[in-house]
Image (cartoon, rainbow, N blue to C red; front, side, top):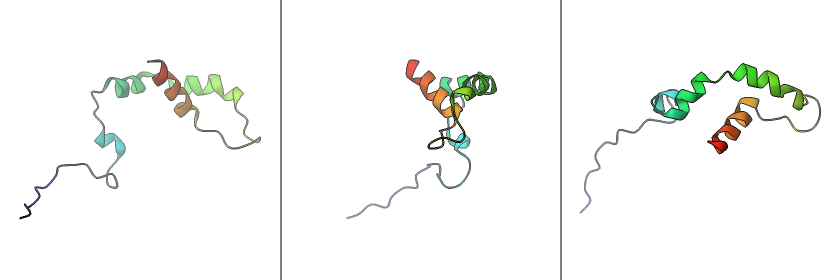
Length: 71
């Protein structure tokens, strides 16, 4: 005999924003709000070319992944 499934209180990926689904108390999210991303983008933008090769990934993504790796 199959049991009726109870409703699952799970956020829907397709409605609402991603930030609504994340835990605002997570230390990595708090750290992302404190970092001066504009300053990092300005410092690293000289190493990326706009007209040669494949378009680069966003600098914030690349710098954030590097920081996460070292943390």
